[in-house]
Amino acid sequence: MGTAERRGAPRAGGAQLRGHRDPEAIDRDLPEGVAEPSGQETGVPAHEVGRGAREQHYRPLWVEEPARRRRLPDPVRTAAVRAVLLTAVTLIQAMVAFLCTMAGSWLAFPMVISSVVSTIAATWGALDVWVTRQVWNQRHGVVSVPSSTARALRRERRRTRRQERAAERAQERIRRRGGAGQLSHS
Image (spheres, rainbow, N blue to C red):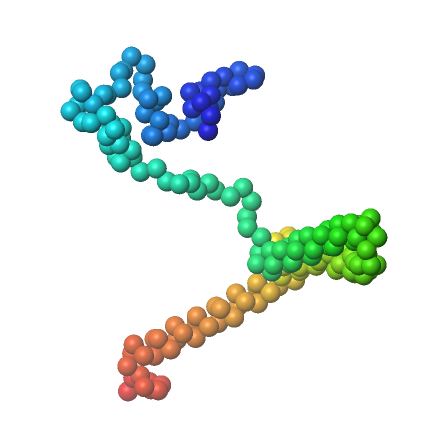
């Protein structure tokens, strides 16, 4: 963070920048009219002045900020990473093929062929990301469409969970009554 941000200097358009105060920059953060404590005034050696201020304030290395968007689902993220790697390899192969062609190397032809194959693979990777995302959305009910299969799946899962809980409650009732298979209280 720069000095202008720390001091709240006006930006273009008249907006004020307000930043947090840096506890290590005690000479700049002192209010106006307050002198910086020196070693003679406090009885502390000059190289020790300001160290107490730093030790009193714990300053984390980074501040957690809430994410702007939700994290991608695992299968979609895996497909995206795969697509990025395929694209990177394709670009490197294309560059090597070009350089080999310019140099007149025998490696130019095999590299051009492998670049074409890699381009096909990278295209497949990009399509894989799109298809994986669509499938995940359909299965997990993100798409709110009346004919969504995810809604029927959720309804079915809820029904089975309710039945399981009802069966557990019935078994618990039988155990509490002390019935080891008793059908009546006689």
